[in-house]
Length: 166
Image 1: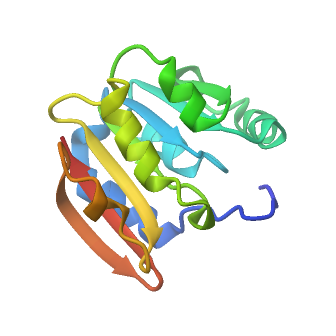
Image 2: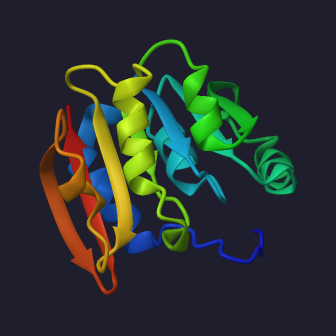
Image 3: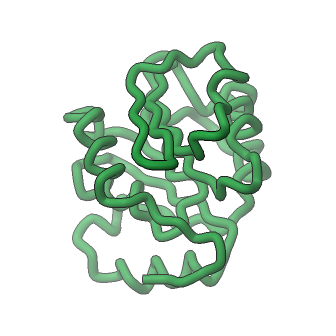
């Protein structure tokens, strides 16, 4: 769909693993796909019955490409496209999310700041699930424990998949 430097869409195997972990938890859920890139995770959640999905992506051209690509998609009314820097956007958001997808560019060390921002800005509540995808060489979850608990994790090649719960 889009070819941008550093764009690394979540692979099919990782997506399948994640949505197997989630099961029916996507139905009716309020979701946000941070660092949306191609929107693969958020769009998959919408197709699996999420009530509302926010796709947050800094690259405005990429956001327009996703919008154009999904314009006639049946679930598009559930999706909100947001062209913004994730860390700045988090500060202004009212309310919490049921499902949060975090898959930033690995080389920018954003995982810890985003995890801390989720609690600091009230974007999580008891029961919220957070999917974190990161390079196996980093371990942002170990540095930010409260209020997150790892419920599932799996290594796929050089990538670590983790599902956290508040």
